[in-house]
Image (tube, rainbow, N blue to C red; front, side, top):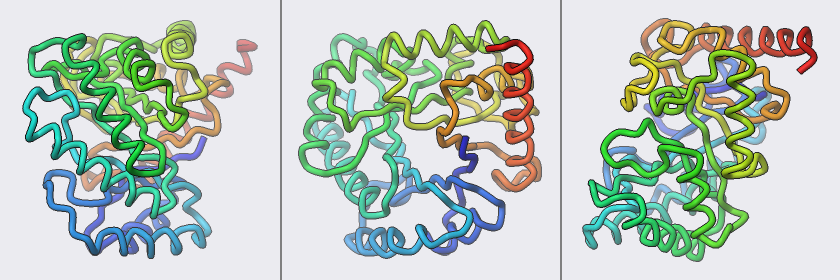
Length: 290
């Protein structure tokens, strides 16, 4: 696996790259714009292109992943918000491609109580529009399950991809905290194996683009998105060993989005923790022959 983190971007993308290198991150996740604003300055695409030429020369960072703004909601019944979300997502996908990112991770949004089936076609149509307007890979993230969010199960993600005409530019990102909060346990090797088989059946492991490796402040099945530093939350070390050691998940980017041991976001100590759990998970599976 390639381990890394969501990196603070104060000072710009080049400053973020320096932070990623300083912590020893093989993967850095960044935003192409402010994650909580709609405004997309034209200069961003120019900065993205410059960054796309700079980071491949790094001796530390091997992969860049982008994350779409949190305001995007492809499931909304509000036509104004829907159109704004499509445009924002297309802009961000173009920027991610200019950065040389391996994909743009996306929260699909909430149907606001209307139900998954009622908004499935709208979500799929938005995805097709965005992919028609811009190159790059869209990576659909699973959710914790609260607030009518789309993607609370592997089956929902699979249905969205299928309705979007199985475009090969669609991938998935599995967030461990969201998985746990949605009620899916991976606390043992057997449970982790079931999770991977379920993902393969519903989506296909060939579409698994990255992992978000986050512990949880809340219990199993709580339905709430609350990240905790790996090893300090409710999920537990055994679960991370079982999942990170799975043979079919190796070589994936594994990205932390956590408060961090020192409380300032992920850092070298956090990377050391997940790398240790990964190594222990590999050793555990070797001993068990699985």
